[in-house]
Image 1 (tube, rainbow, N blue to C red):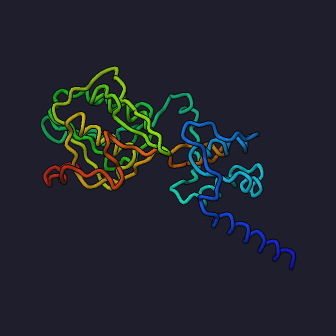
Image 2: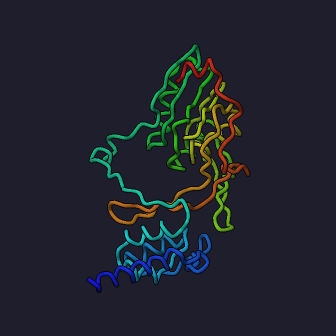
Image 3: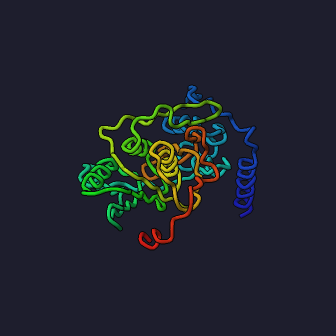
Length: 283
């Protein structure tokens, strides 16, 4: 019994030392794009990937967890003081693997007035551009399109870029990613087809986040869209996804996003509220 109590005290003291170690004392991660200190085996390779985006203390993590990557991931999340998180992997069914089925990006698309159509864009799924082209090109008359992003919390960054291109065409250096003092310019690619929208509005709110916020700003700046609603969430960074085990993955905040010099920190400020008559028709 005394031995068990002593062991618990030793472990508790070690964990306290681990979590109270100041960030400056942790092993510094390499500069963006630089080759990290190389590990060996699955555990070492996992730490290599983490070290590109977060400070890691290899000796302590190895001593605490040995080859257990999930243990190390939990300690990394607890020690970083960042919005890092562990996330359970949702495994696709057989049809999704064969690409026979896909989640829909557009949860609702309806006409509310002559020439006025509202599209609820809830996510950026694999067939996003196909959905956009099919739904918009199937309209007989279109004078005003409203894209509702109020429930879109973001998602695949590259899919968002390709969808933006349908409305804006190609844009050089549209986005800037900043990480550890280094910057990278990101273009909006040339689309296979371009949509002609006479009038475009975008709805945002507190649940609009990440890539959805970027889309709203890009459409306002490059497609002459009016942004309506309430201030968005303000997630101004990309997550890097690092596989941990078959069932878990680690999400680490990495590059900070800005759109033509405009930061997303604090949220996107709309041009105005949603007019009452419009709100009564769409909500």
